[in-house]
Length: 210
Image (tube, rainbow, N blue to C red; front, side):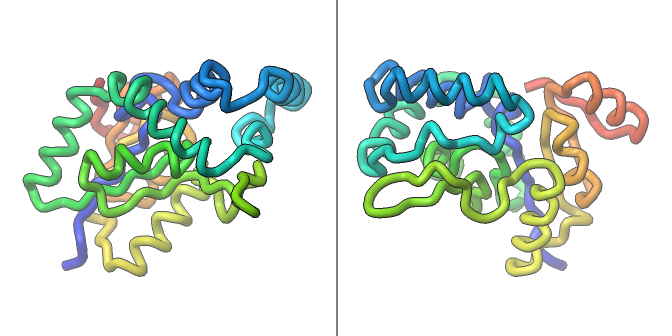
């Protein structure tokens, strides 16, 4: 039998709120992101809202060292206090059963490294941003873990590490997690959006509220 894992989305599942939005605001407050740069980024998003999840241009040109420091600050001050107590208890329940934890999220990888360490999760799959000469490029490298890409990235990880996805669990809140749910034996809708709730009822997936 292969490894049994429990895969957790982060935003609105383990964390109340959206971690990258919290980070964006923290960068502004702490001076890590200039107001004109932030304003230009938001104007671009307003012109092309469909690109809002892929556009990371606000990070372009920022010092990697300074940004990582601010990311740690943001996690400690803004994200950690929003961790769901029932969500953390669910993680610990799986670990007590010998299941290994995978964090699978569209948020930024460097922002959620402290969460990976806090949970003792062996794997974090998240959005990676290119780096050059000590600065972020503002471009995504590799597949961004959203929608179908979540499934593809999980299948790749499972193949390398011998995971038995038929016996494994996945927790997510959004219709974007549907592709992931269809690749797993035990999907669980957490704080689900109305579309995901409707599908969870249709397929009789458990619904939980963290």
